Amino acid sequence: LPLDGLQGAGTGPLYRKLRQSLEDAIRSGKLDHGDALPAERDLADYAHVSRVTVRKAVDDLVRDGLLTRRHGSGTFVVKPMSRVEQPLTRLTSFTEDMARRGVVTRSEWLERGLFHPSPEEMMMLGLAPGTSVARIGRLRIGNDMPLAIERASISAEFLPDPSAVTTSLYAELEKKDARPVRAIQRISACNMKKADAGLLCVPIGSAGLSIERVSYLASGRVVELTRSLYRGDAYDFVAELSLGE
Ligand code: 16G
Image (cartoon, rainbow, N blue to C red; front, top):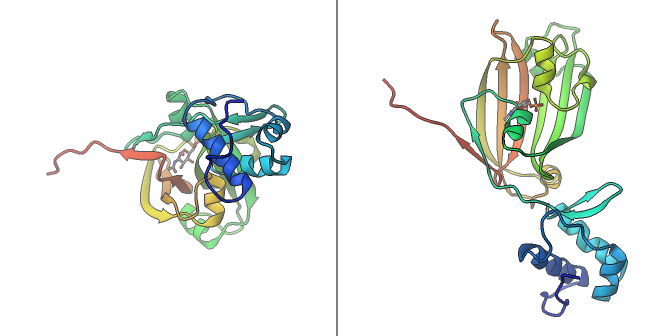
């Protein structure tokens, strides 16, 4: 196995030492990105620890985003993504942005359905009383690395069947002739709370960028109200500036 013994691997409980030793193997390239992690039993035999200890160490590394579990095929070393440089002046979708960079995306669903709108959604989206709102909440993942949590609210008029959104919300809106053409976006700094940090695989309190986007149709109608939380260690937002009048 491409692992050094647990002797020099720091102090504390065994699973921490094993975690450290696995992390060292990943950082030094002995375990390469995309490699499958040896079977739990082999790791346990090799390190002279129990399988419970191995599982704890692996859980730790999965939580911190160094390893990923793929259902049915095992545990793999995550390909780290370099920081994403995101232009601030183009109204593109996550799926498009990532495809352009050759990043493989997927989403985990946090929420998807029609709901009774909150007063804020009614106001922001200009909803008539008695109408519903479609909510699309997703953890957005690029090359196995969780990048952002996005929660979008859309008038049901433009998205009567939220379950039709399987990959791209904007692609689905486009089919309904309701893809936004203009948006206002506000970005502010925040520290991640426990639940969000857990989803994004970063330590609690890590720097995040909280982004609010309100998007419009050419007619001026609001289509989308989206609140997102982006990983501060993964994104650079860039804009070209020119001398004002
Ligand atoms: C972007 C947008 C989000 C929009 C999503 C649609 C931000 C910062 N970004 O991530 O508002 O809902 O794209 O992406 O809010 P999709 O078409 O891939 O679902």
